[in-house]
Image (tube, one colour):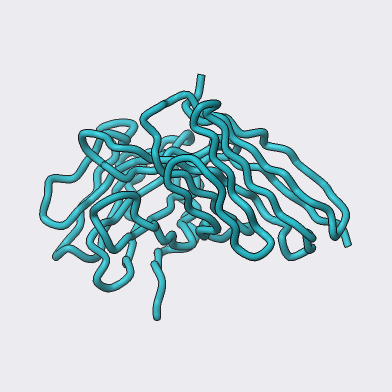
Length: 115
Length: 114
């Protein structure tokens, strides 16, 4: 079946502009995660959605970052007033279960470059 | 100090060699340990998953967890050029919010030379 998809695959923007990144999780997966991968930094947790529960936003680096998940499926990560340090690969993952350690399935990522 | 430490490499080995990849961690709350493989410009894919201490084998791959030493390993036997990728260790435990958020190492870049 279809895996996690993300769009766009690449995004180049100018400093100060807003960007929206989209994630389509695997159908039926209740949990959705956003991570950021910077060069030499590994993957950094940003935000977590689980069903209808309030999202865990503890990883968002600043109030310029926000995310929503509509209808328990598609998610959008928005970065306002982008800065050069926001340049990274943004990865989305989904998983089917709530207990234990879910197997997280990752999308290919969106490579964001802020000029 | 990072919660998870991983040597970034790069690690270069000849085809057929046994590869050993390692991570150390500081948070004793971690219970679930994973290894992901990431090819260039692709998302990570899960290779191995282990709960608590012990060994797990899957084909040419063996994962080991030593919770007393806070040390995990991934061994690749008979390495192939197709194994060339970045290998990321990841861990999770029980948190108040995101129960299953993964804490990743920085990844080790592996090159298997034909």
